[in-house]
Image 1 (tube, one colour):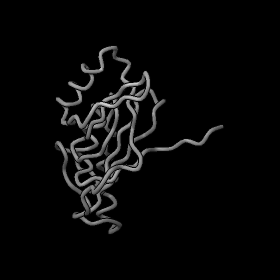
Image 2 (tube, helix red, strand yellow; image 1 turned 90 degrees about the vertical axis):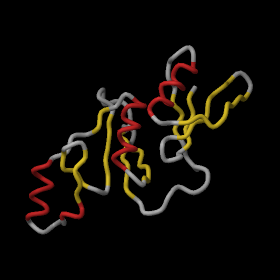
Image 3 (cartoon, helix red, strand yellow; image 1 turned 90 degrees about the horizontal axis):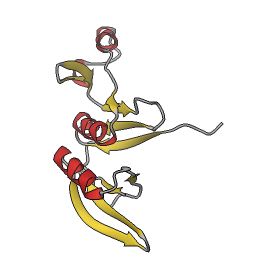
Image 4 (cartoon, helix red, strand yellow; image 1 turned 120 degrees about the vertical axis):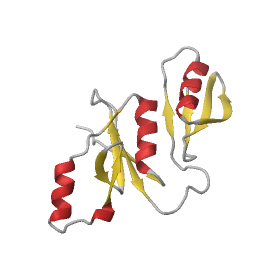
Length: 141
């Protein structure tokens, strides 16, 4: 059996970036267990400052995750880091939209907050390189 994995992405605002990618990938943001968060704070295992309310739900401040509702794609985890993105990604996602006209998918992602960076071509292959709301590059084919 192959190893399973999740994709972890550093973020200034993990909850907002998680929302973007959940919509971009047609994933679902993982639900928060507010009772668990409260119990951890009450027991002294965490502090109130480790939490925040996002869209009316108590969550951990340091991260957010989304997952493929079909369970086939990798889980995406967004973790809070203090520094902003600097430089080009060493790893990026290639999104295969399945849409015949790539410009339709590019426009949908732009409406979610992504921006186009450039068009690429190698032999018969073409793609659009984009950046998510925090500047992380990804490609759309």
